[in-house]
Length: 162
Image 1 (spheres, rainbow, N blue to C red):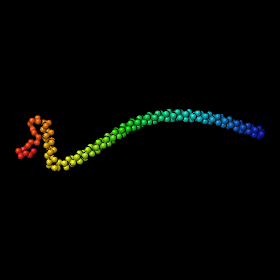
Image 2 (cartoon, one colour; image 1 turned 90 degrees about the vertical axis):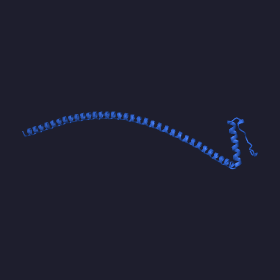
Image 3 (cartoon, rainbow, N blue to C red; image 1 turned 135 degrees about the horizontal axis):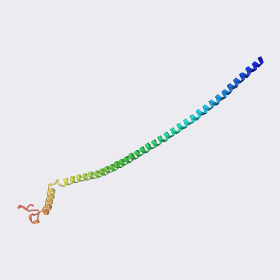
Image 4 (tube, rainbow, N blue to C red; image 1 turned 180 degrees about the vertical axis):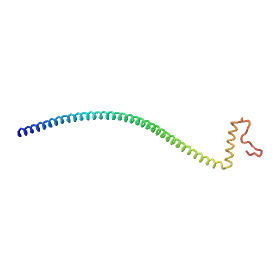
């Protein structure tokens, strides 16, 4: 009987061990199913996050492209304005150079007239030369303004001087 009881105790222990092993296997299957479910959910979540990030990245790329286009247009307009201003400045400098050249020529002419006046002053320093030139100018002026019967050149005085 002891043997039967020992066999029965062994049988009960084996049944309990078998039940524990079966429960453990069932638990492993359940845990494995949960891990698969969590893995699937995690992959879906990562996929959604990647799609969301890609859509935001695409939207930001579009905005950056628009801003870049606007900046490029502004730079182009500014460049055109700068080129126009540079052309105007160049034209103005050219005109100033031309005016300075003309002014230099006019200054040279004034200098020449001054030298001529100096030469004329030397000629007119003699009283006889001044008188002769005055008579010449007066005779030209009178002949243009009056009939020739109204005046006479080199009028003779009573003492015979002219």
